[in-house]
Image (cartoon, rainbow, N blue to C red; front, top):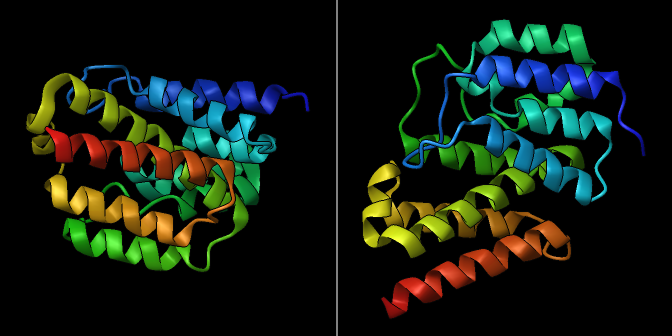
Amino acid sequence: MRLSERFSKALVLAETLHRTQIRKGSGTPYIAHLLGVASLVLEAGGDEDEAIAALLHDAIEDQGGLKTRDLIREKFGDRVTEIVEGCSDSFDGEKKKPWRERKEAYLQHLTTASASVHLVSMADKLYNAQSILRDYQRIGEILWTRFKGKKEGTLWYYNSLLAIFDPDHPLAQELRHTINTLEKIIRTS
């Protein structure tokens, strides 16, 4: 598969929307996460729409809500927009529900979500879990202060995701391995 100009335009839009955003605790520019998720989607056989959605998967949630959703629809079409919406647990600008309630609703949504939403979500969660594992190995228990769900909630959420994702999918298998490794390191620390 060859990527078209649409992917280039999505990359520029993602960088523009997230330019001032950084990753929790690390200070890494947020675009690194978006590029990593898009890379995982492409390496797992995703198509261009799925890769574009990976670049933009946090745009509605973090950078403009419904206005950004409408921009994505205008520039990239209904399918990309539906995948991005399917990866969002809230919309920027709306009053966010409590963390656990949002996560439970997202998990429920995933039970009927499309394969494309699952692909982008698995890539996103895998990238995040790998970051958590690396940071835990570097800074230890202090890591959990970054997360609203703290240690117990974060581990519950990732294990709940694993119960929904296709266990035979390579991204789900890598996510399971990452979470198992994290839990083993936590137990032995």
